[in-house]
Image (tube, rainbow, N blue to C red; front, top):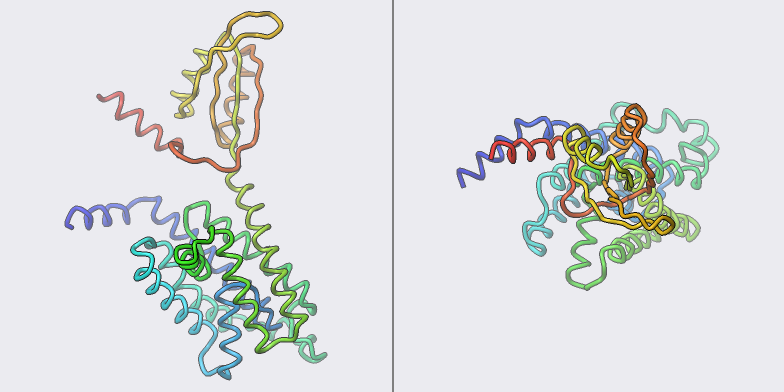
Length: 318
């Protein structure tokens, strides 16, 4: 226990911890703004815990603030998660799930949506953009960007993700279907406060949100697979390992036209590293045949260049 406590204390002292804490906080501030300014005024219900909270808030006659309801529901879901799914959720999920409610109330105190939508309120359309479809587009873009940013550091907004994992475990749906089922159920609760048209808009918004999250996630996580055939493969290999601090794979290949045997070098790089190696090869006048392709998801042993550098230093010491 003492070792685990010490590890936790050491982790809190790292730059990575504070960087991810700032990213999570900013991501949740954007999420809270999207909920408060684009869902609350028009009562547009998307398949999220925030949408369910808006429904309950209206049914309860605004007895509790929206932020308070969001926080209560997230607390309940976190407790259920620890009971039903065991300790699968760490600090990141707990932190993001619990600050969404207070941040929603924060936007209400700092700059109420009524200050933006005065003209629309007078015309009988309580909406920041004046049209539920425009509200939907703004909400989905902001929420999807925030979700993709947090997915990139292995965090999430909590809420629906927790509910989806519970559905996944006990109803044996895959996680994508679990998110869709949980979101659709929440959307249907909007029948208590909205007409059929608004419920349909909410269902469409839930579907579009999933598509846009996939797009943003693929963009943020985009890497390059670079394949190089060159007689100077040994120089290239050393540059990748010693300068970029990446691993690489070497294959023996045979030219289909010439029949000559050669070595093909394959490496996975981020965008900056990809630009560096191309610039270096150009400066060094290395003759090579190179191809590159995009890779949106990486699994297994692949991490930041800093970690590879640390591993290399350990190997050198040994």
